[in-house]
Amino acid sequence: MSTGVGVSSCCLSGKVHNGIPAGHVEEIGGLQTYVAAPESQSKAKSVIFITDIFGWELPNVRLLADNYAQAGFYCYVPDVHNGNSLPISFLQNVEPPLKEQAQLTLVDKAKNAAIVPTTLGPWLLSHREAVTAPLIDGFVNAVRMLPGTNKIGAIGFCWGGRYAILQAHGQKQDGSGSSVGGVDAAFAAHPSLVAIPADFDPVARPLSLAMGTKDSLLSLDQIGQIQDLLAKKTDVPHEIRLYEDQIHGFALRGDWSSDKDKEAMDEAETQGKEWMEKYLS
Image (tube, rainbow, N blue to C red; front, side, top):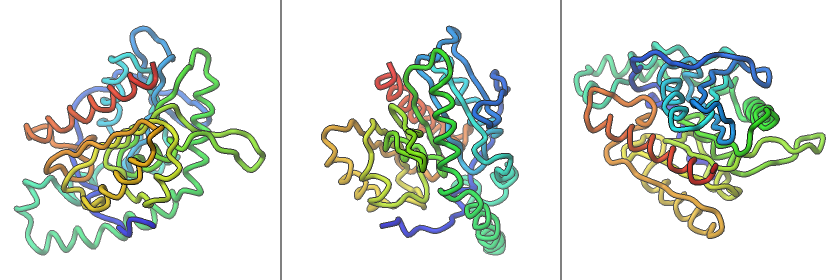
């Protein structure tokens, strides 16, 4: 069944990080794509970042792709929203980090709560699975065809975390009978809007999950259900790591000024890198 969790302002929370991305933009598979290449320029270990609702231009995801590139991965951040990502301004004015939430008045909180459904509802409809999944499958296919590509991993955050999980189902057949999508390993941080058990029963590729204990979109009970489902897959490598007191979005949009939040972000990054190194090498 579905998680039953609707649209949440936590999807819109977090911080924009400082830094200048070092990669470049090119078109791949019909999508504008940020590319961060390792020093070796090797595509043997390729990683596709499936972004959150703020999209491929968010500095955070580009800086993170740069970090993965420095670790030897050839990284792609495609615009799977086709130019229709939510504006970054929502990060600062819809739901701030926990330490700032305590300072909000009831009026402020009510305003924020009213913004969420009118903003996210129409956007999620425009970017529903029937629209998004074929775009991502097509991009995976395009990367697979690039000379030098060997294994491919998918890394997803929040909204994109679910699509990383779907890519861990492996290749599937499209309407014409052609094989589409499917990666060799996937890492999803605080995935949102997942269906339990439907999104996890078909998992057939190594899957690593990073989740916060205070994620408003996945309760500890729901995380336990996911753990039970994956535990039955004795032939599929998997792991779930819980991050104490971390909210939705922590691995990509955490607050660098908080030592605890920065540590959680760094640990989640290491989790993803180690998973990809193990299963893409």
